[in-house]
Length: 107
Image 1: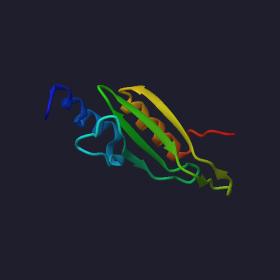
Image 2: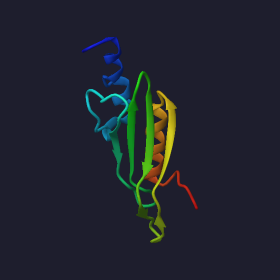
Image 3: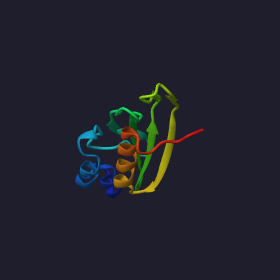
Image 4: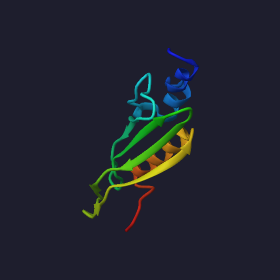
């Protein structure tokens, strides 16, 4: 590590636990770069969802609902949400809800 801020870019155990089996992130983040950390598979009414983390002295998450069709064949477009700092658990819950069809955005 180069300086005391380098610890801010290490993945925490708490972060890995929040995303559970969906976790696909690194052990060390590149500062200020959005990095894929979790991927959730689509269930019948949901959309696949991915979560990106941008690590600074805190963590910021972007949840992206990927395009899909629901069980009725209706197309669901891409959409995204951003969190404030250190909201791994919220980001995981949102992504899981999108994938299961419990959270959607209608135009």
